Image (cartoon, rainbow, N blue to C red; front, top):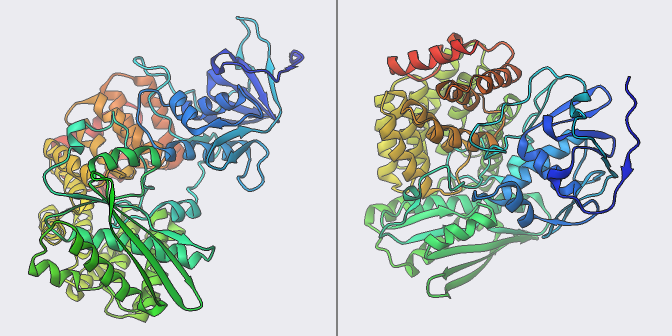
Length: 586
């Protein structure tokens, strides 16, 4: 074995691009190969993860600000703090590090990160190969011909296993009001992923609902704060003369949203000794003044009365007219049972993780909510989603039976609360899985009549439009969903990328699919369409690399079996996708 040259320990600054081969702690780094090694163990990094690691290694022991990392690693692309956070989380996984007891990457609150492990830069002659590292199972991902490095990173994957998404991470970061975002966290919108016109404003006033802050350390308070935020968005969205956007996006993209929003709603929640203290503020950011502020101090069992009062107070201040029908819908609280509400919120958090184990936990929590309130329609809708996911993701031994159960529970939800938009959305989703697209669209149109700002309904309509062979129509619907929810998760990007693929626009498809995978590296469907896009653009090495990623995620993947339960019904599009996947060996 060739002896490694003696390392020269450096404590001076280096530019990351000048580093050839580096040792960080017990890991040997090969930037050219986007991989790290510890003995015989090899871990593959995506380009963005390697870029962050090298940027930190160039200044060992020093704090590198988040802004500096974002500007250096994502040049000329508008992304939020969440993109960097995800890369650091995955870097820690790769290095065997933890946030609580860091040995490599330390987070400095409100500042950035610093590398605390020993860093060694090895002096290397121009001809010396970084490829002395052991060979790995998959070849490095081919670089795009038109960009170096590629415009987005896509997480970290070991050559032996793909890490599961952390349930805790999703529960902490996600506060979605709908169902369509269960797959990924609320993230950031890259300016290159959607055209500027897709997020342009219109004449209706736009309110940005910021996440309500939980004061204190009790987990229950955080849960209630997320629930209040979600319900406020849902309730205000029922007003046809008002546009509503969530405020869960990271700070760097929140500024862009506020440039569109005239009004910003924020607040805090605190509870102790059976009391609920809620403080809410409504600001007019154009006029630069606070319009309204109110403090509630009630018994904790009065949560729903507080929410009702809060919505009425906000609408009384905003320059909108609320119709009689909308007033009646606003008066229909989903449940008046606090125990049922808390079980439901926990079920929603578990459902967001999109793993088989968490799906079963979500189902049990929805049942607990129903036991506490047998008329709780949204809990039945949640049950329907757990069975629909069992079918969609192949978790059920009998997929047909699971889909039948999903339809039964969704119909029960509709019968209990026909005026709740979410019940119609879930019926739309279930009918989509059953390939009953006309029926699905009927329910989604009903959901949009009940809630004109329902971004997830526009997104699902866009997905169906592609399934039935109308991808150009899908692009318009998805632009609307992005405008209504600028902090969309990975599925919005997947749907837009899929539509552009069938339109033959490889570049737009590529950008959006990479954004989807940046937010959720385990999205099998996004990998499948990315492989097809690379084939479309004659990037055969990249297509083969994606085929390897698909087999790593699902070793027994078979295109025909996958398409058998996939809702794509347009024959020409199905044949096109099937041919592309077959030509790259899938």
